Image (tube, one colour):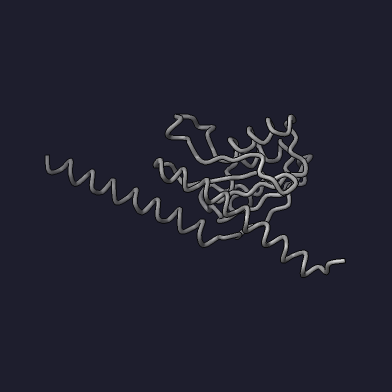
Length: 173
């Protein structure tokens, strides 16, 4: 029988492995000019849903990484209930995505970095662990936090610089 420290190390290795996959999804968003948020859903050590932010390109408020991954995972499972799954997401879910996580009964959520301006898994609210709801999710935060956070910072820095250049170019006309 494995001791708790060994089990914890295995869980941490698995969480890092799948967060790397979520980061891979976030990089797809980054490449198309979207806010770099990525998500994967895992069931029995297999990825069954993937998603990355596509709000701007799809012109759809609902095109969040988590919702896209939930849709794919539900289709794969043949059920709206995603019991036994773990969601890995690079940025703390918003209120809409946190609500979808609760509704889909995902029991475990692993977050890369927190979102103090819009996060609803601990920053502003914690919708994932409200006892008033009929479902709560275990929440693990800070997995590969620096890499997830740095990607967001780089994206918004580049966006600000591009807007500054655009404004400068417009003033020269």
